[in-house]
Length: 361
Length: 183
Image 1 (cartoon, each protein chain N blue to C red):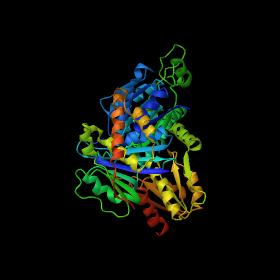
Image 2 (spheres, chains in turn orange, red):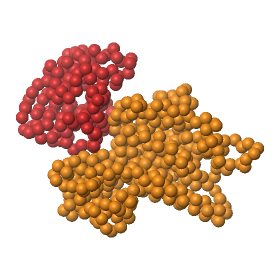
Image 3 (spheres, each protein chain N blue to C red):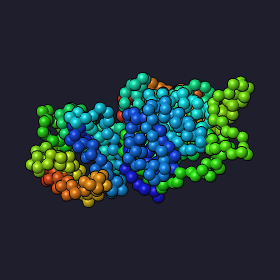
């Protein structure tokens, strides 16, 4: 077993990045995730693993530094919070188009605009439906604990390279600021040039030798027929993600008459709501999507014929609820409860909403 | 056992670090812990609070409506959190600066004159450890030896020479807990 520590979610992102052999981090500070770069700087990984940690002049610069380094087959990441992620949207679309692996962490705060620095989940649509332009998908992981903040950095890099696609860790201010126990992986070495050649040698710009064609990292293609084929290749990849990468947790769903669906810190709050409601004799369960994209639609469709209704609990105006409605396809009632602008509901508040919207409603 | 605690007071009183030491102490006795601070434009003199949960089981929500114990260290926090102690729960407060004392009849009310005792100790910075001592007397959820280990773990090594002073402050807090009301 690895080292046990008590750490903040944001600090763990940094620690996991160093330990899994990340080559570089480029970022720009913003609350509530500034501890990510602070922790990286304090650890000085450039002295041990050789990892580059660089504060860029802006989020736009950060994501394009990630683009450049990822093009060379390196494991690179960035992190920001909502307004900063909006600034990165162009670069994220370009990376998806150029099929570049990377890990992007969004510790969400309330919007729109500069909004608030308090926790929010209002970037669900941005993360899962685009954000940037074009027909692209990210792979989106939603951590609900400090341990998952750690685990999803490691997993995120694996998936990013499996699919040559940007992976987003969609956290929020609660998980970023929360301190819990975490078991850290042992330090892994960064990839050597030989390993990079083996893993990404067919596409990465690692230095052209005489006996191979040049590798071009770009999302641009002026020939529409080729561009359509590029899109078809991307779509096939996204279909493969749907088949192979759906992850979720089902809590007390077996005998449930009602099911709440929540991700990230909202799912933690709903776990307590499940306890409170069951003490009152209400049979309620919780489905926690771990991958928001691909969305766990099959499990929701399965329960749609068994339960009296779903309640989507989100810190936003009701975004994931639309994906639940698509999965349920009219077979049962789907309601939404949430708070906005940085307000985090308590488990009791969610329980009252469950009662009002689903059970009596 | 699950103990859900809110510690609330002024920024600069050591509210967050008291919570951190409590959380580390919980880890030292192999329990699940969660530490969740109010964050934002908090500063010295503004309000600050932290939720600490110590449990034998996996912890669900770090966001809570009601608490087993509220440790209240200024009037704003009294106004905000007195109503959020569970019925049958415990409220511990420092009367310094409190103008509206707690009035609920369905909770245990205890007090410790942390500010005065810290001044008497000759070091106002021991305030939060005196209050922690009072809490541990009221709710012995953590063994003192694990608090010592928690201090060692949470304080940077250059501050380890201050551990005996902190332990002394905890002892003074334990000895000076006053019962206002038990139910």
